[in-house]
Length: 635
Image 1 (tube, rainbow, N blue to C red):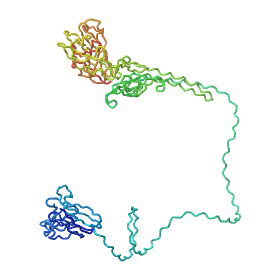
Image 2: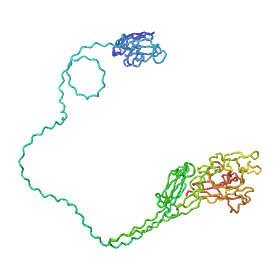
Image 3: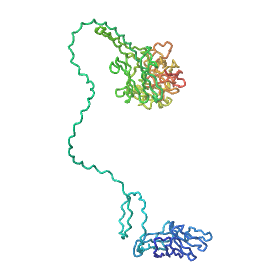
Image 4: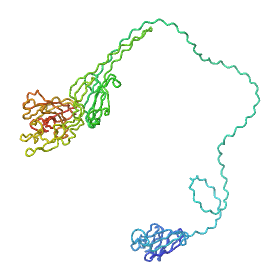
């Protein structure tokens, strides 16, 4: 049960004495002293009040066990007389709580005050709940004292130095009207202020009266003679005299020297390794004039270099450039760009850069002869020099690399307007299932994604594991194997699925080792094939298609996406030691520098299925360990 007491304390209170009997009881007293009173033995059963820890009285054995409440931190402290120290504590093992709320001015406290509730934090929630309040005391503010008598007027102080004017403060709230003070003594007279600025100009006064005429002054001395005046204007020109007789004509000037002969322009294409110019490699195209006339574009003759990089297919067009703004005497336009629509043709909208290799121009005419000293007419100009001759080139008709992909990679050199160029042999076409990159986009048979993957043919004893290969009409895939078993029926294990001529044995015959410069033609590469009852007689050469090619060392050309490149081979009717086999030969342009495997392959069903052959001879399948070897060196 709680109790309530009301006390009136002055506003300067520092502590109050609160009586405690068991739990906290009502407030007992308050004081306006500025320091805590000395405790007595009678205070040991009371809780007394202090504002701060520093205002606690000395702890002496006489007040051992005295309890004080400190307002500043809301804690209770007990005096330990044996050690003369104040120790923070709680009451009955529970933390004491205090709640202070303001009291508005009224009948209880005319000038307002505070209601202070005490109790124990029984539920341990860290605050004093209403149900835990055991004692409440109201501490009222003291009433205002009566106005004291007016003190005597002090003597006049010396005038202090004028302080700097402070910033204008905000407008304060209107205070109550104070009583009128007595009139102060008159201050000393201030120092005279500084002279003010000059005032504006006053109006002009009226003009004074004119003074009387002064007497005539004496005549001055004669001045010195002035300077001579400027020259007068030119008089009119006299009439023209009669024309003199015509002098003899001057001798004609010598003819101008003939112009220098035209210099051939050359273009050279070389593989560009992967690096700063082409991150994935490509083709380096150099152009210039054949200054020494040896038909070779040497390093000191190169005037422009361009790069066609791998990635999206890069294309190059070299077309004649007529005489005009770009080449006065005509020449070659070299167009480069990316095949963005993947059709293998560099169209006008795909051209990213165009450079020109121009022919030489005719020499200028000689200057005219000079006139004679006696006024004869100037001689006629000399005849123009002979025009430069059209450039010529050598090396046409040789297999070359166009720098493109797939079937577009092989070309033949040709001389166009004096420039040796590589002309593409095969134009791109729609992709079909034939093991070739027909659309020149760097992918072989990309629509036939099962090509080269394993499958099963035949039944029973003729069942065999084979690979998906292209059909005869190139429209799709068929499952085929490369094992010839005469005991099996057609379409049940015979190579080429029985739709064509079986390949019993084949080989890369010659050469099995090649070393070439990049872009150089391989020359004839020979391949042989044997099929019982077919190659043993003459006239069946059209039963086979043959190809020669190269690919990554150690790879199987029959595997899908193996990275092999193939070119057609033709029948060699002149073979004298072929026995029961047929021989074919073909050529290819050497690729970028590196090491490659060489092989040949045959189809007995017009390209629907292929049998790859190594250099070891004998029956299929292909053995990478017996492949031919191709070494390509940089030019």
